[in-house]
Image 1 (tube, helix red, strand yellow):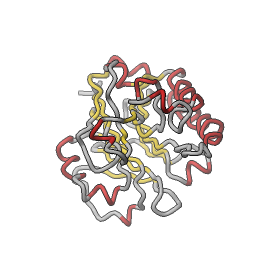
Image 2: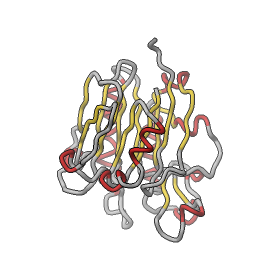
Image 3: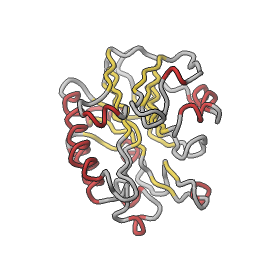
Image 4: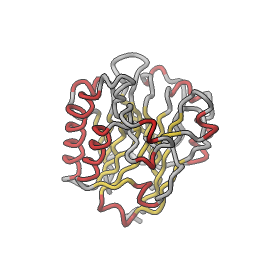
Length: 254
């Protein structure tokens, strides 16, 4: 099964920037998209061969997630039971026979770290509880914009960004806490090298210079690691300030 995740920074905008061709070319089995910034009735597009599930934010033009899948899930659940996160459409969970896929858009703490306390004291525990509840039933794949560079290797300029949004000790610890309860960072499992990023500022030609951050992840329950066949990112895919991250997991079904 090929699983992709992409923060599209506005689904309606990216539709005019090559998204249909990207979808046809990559042909994922499951695609989690974040920051859709739209409700389904506002999106004038068909996605041939895919079922589409939506979790838009209550606030217009903000946040939200969606999932495209070729296989009909056994079940689909919006939210994690935390009021603020759920009103922002930040988590969409689909259950498949082999595992759950949890499409995730973690709150950005903001330049002044205004949401840092919420991020680590409210969101973090609620999200980990959600993953733990699912993990008690079957393995889990979480994917999405996690809004944190986990280690210094995950951003081009770590020294200059210590304590900044996305690279605070608190956010990094929160991500480590997820991994500690039985998950692996799929990309780092197979690629220990630096220079691989999934987000670039629009300013100062950061993308052209590859001055980026790796903040989009596909995490796997440890039980799934023997089935991980590939993990990669697609930095040449344009249309957003993020690029897609991808994994291929061997199916246990014929």
